[in-house]
Amino acid sequence: MAEDPSAPVVVITGASAGIGAALARELAGRRASLVLTARREEVLRELAVTLGGPVEVVPGDVTRRADVERVLERAMARFGGVDVWVNNAGRGITRPSFEAITEQDVDAMVRDNVRSVLHGMQVVLPHFKARKQGVIVNVSSMLSRVPLVSFRAAYSAAKAAVDALTEAARAELAKDFPAIRVVTVLPGVVATEFGNNALGGGPDSRSLPGAQPVDEVARVIADGLFAGPVDLYTRPGYFEMVLAHLRGLAGHPSA
Ligand SMILES: NC(=O)c1ccc[n+]([C@@H]2O[C@H](COP(=O)([O-])OP(=O)(O)OC[C@H]3O[C@@H](n4cnc5c(N)ncnc54)[C@H](OP(=O)(O)O)[C@@H]3O)[C@@H](O)[C@H]2O)c1
Image (tube, rainbow, N blue to C red):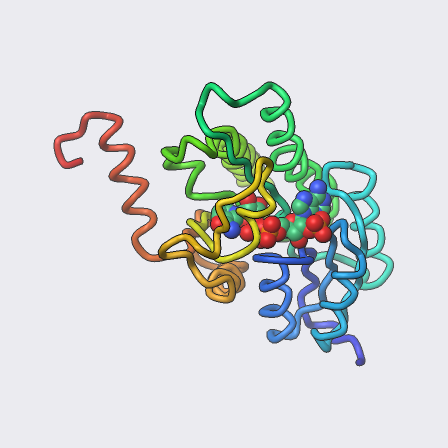
């Protein structure tokens, strides 16, 4: 298929499954040019052939900076630039109690959820600064704002770190690079294999009551890439849940 020079070039990490794969399908339908990365190359290639548009597959592990640098290099070589970079890859954890969290668990959560996002942001930012524009999207979690699911406490902490990094970068860029947009995505439970893939195993996110369909999440993210709130809650009512939580912490009478 001929490549459309006006189509945005979007990099998606963690594109082999779940939210990343659904976002790839959604954006392919909107004629984006895609650069997809994850560790499972065969799964990525199988997805790519179903998308029908220009897709570059770059296998890699986002916890390794050199792999993330290679993603940018391949995107530049194929498409000449990147418009949107989505740091979506991440991993949960299940531990039976707060006391069961180990130091290794904390290191793993920081490696898989925080360093991975930091790599993506730091690798693409020089390119966006040179062009004075671009969109960074970091997929966080409602558990970063309402960390009340104790079996995922170490994950919630890591995603809170993602929120802080995202907001700090946004604040730093606002003055000299106002056209670089930095978005935090805040999903609740989404029907993917996230639960099964968590360190320590299930519960299966797809079996949890009220799990949001993954295609709906992908549509919300795609709609919010270039306009709208930079804190992108994937369902109506989530922002109000966060406010109620914060009011409760502050002992606010309306909580
Ligand atoms: N599902 C939920 O309920 C939920 C809720 C809130 C937030 N989130 C967040 O949404 C994002 C996507 O989660 P999901 O639900 O789509 O989970 P998922 O179904 O488990 O998919 C995770 C994706 O990330 C990739 N990945 C994991 N570690 C990686 C690494 N080190 N390097 C490269 N790719 C890696 C996986 O591919 P490979 O195995 O092929 O590498 C896979 O494509 C995560 O950041 C997650 O924390 C999910």
